[in-house]
Length: 268
Image 1 (cartoon, rainbow, N blue to C red):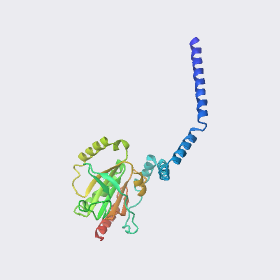
Image 2 (tube, rainbow, N blue to C red):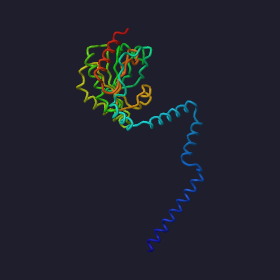
Image 3 (tube, rainbow, N blue to C red):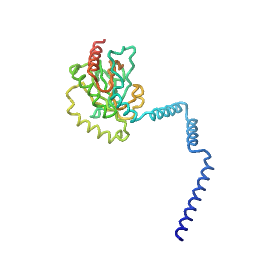
Image 4 (cartoon, rainbow, N blue to C red):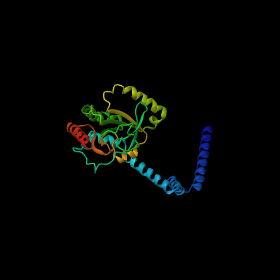
């Protein structure tokens, strides 16, 4: 009985001490935690210049945007349409109406670096060292699940234009995991990719590259929302998007891609 009374007294003492701490904290911080955080952010905005304010607001808008969409939303869409967000273009987009493909830094598995797209008189490309293709097919994959979709476009395209020196095919895999972007891990990953892609040297036009880091604003420019599907872009020599496809290729879409590529090769 004495032990029970001792435990009760200790509990009462602890509760009393906690109440005193809470009362002391409320005197120091009369606002709730959410309000305090809001006040802190306002003070932070007041300290820095307008340029920093814009950056902060930009980041807040980004966080709100990304929280409105996630893996489960992408998976739900994938179940509905199998990654076919829309049908591919049937004809070329006119050059005057076409938008430019945003630049992105990529790496080969052997460590060589490149900025895509390679365009005529752009991106600081030295034309003497790097040939500018008349047509580039850029296939984007953000998750491993979309690799099969990319293959459904790239393989027939590669077979059709394997003898053309004016056509380039890039398969870009985006890696945004902070762990895989760490320098030692990234080098190991690229080394592994180099070994696994040794057998994929059947065509000089097919180039498999990787892009590490944050790609939110790149995706924003291309209006890419679902990361579980594949995105296919046909670019002219000025880096403009002249044709676009999604998901798994249908036979008529492959025919459209090949005919549009031929038309681009004939443009002057």
